[in-house]
Length: 130
Image 1 (cartoon, helix red, strand yellow):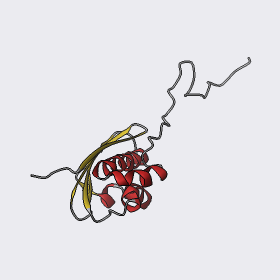
Image 2 (tube, helix red, strand yellow):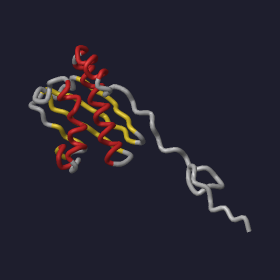
Image 3 (cartoon, helix red, strand yellow):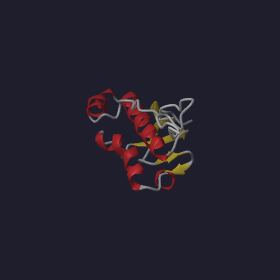
Image 4 (tube, one colour):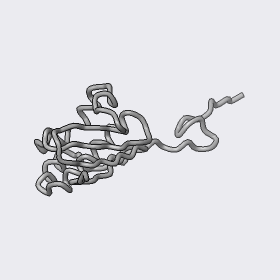
């Protein structure tokens, strides 16, 4: 049976990521796909790997991530947040380096809701004097 060393939930915008850390060789699987096939843009893949680089544990663990909701950017942020939380569970010594890099902080920015009588959240309908 496979044992999870750490579990973390990451959130960003409307995305939620469940991260499971297991002993392994550094393989990252997101929704059943390899990291570089799921996030085709390099910056998103780099974003997910950041907590591993900071804690120098790139080749120590296998990471399994289930992520849903939102877009590509939000999902990458949610994966990073969840991975940082899971790494803290594995080893408490990782906490200070992850905290100082801002990986444990949940980004609170969300899309503002649309208001009635307006075209968007802040945009008004065109004003006509006559």
